Amino acid sequence: MNPTPVQIRRSAPAKFIATNARGAEITIGRSGDGPDFSPVELLMAALGACSTLSADSVISRRLGDDAPIDMVVTAEKDVEADRLTSVQTVFDLDMSKLDEAGRAQLIKLVTKAVELTCTVSHSVEPGTPVQLTVA
Image (cartoon, rainbow, N blue to C red; front, side):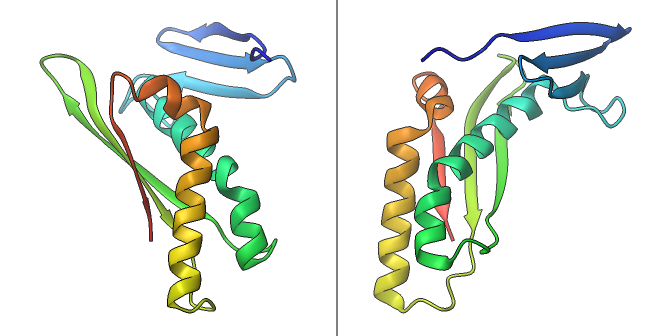
């Protein structure tokens, strides 16, 4: 199934609003220019959101439906080439209720879920390595 279109509309100089077919909106601007997401931050958010959504059911089965799932996404940029050279996605999960074998199994399952089902990283990785860490 193809994704639904996203419309980008200018709202002010160097300010845009992205709207999906369901009516959700995100404001977009230049990095360092107000509270809006920059396009690179949106890419990073998309990678993080795709990873967390891909692993959500696996984590919920092991840690519970109310378990917090946090992720931080960072990136390295080659300023001269004007491109990201790497992206790091790091899950922060409270696995304290699991024994060592349970933690190892959850890390393996989360990694597998993301590697198999995250369309965003599948689209980005051929040109930019995306590194996944579960901690």
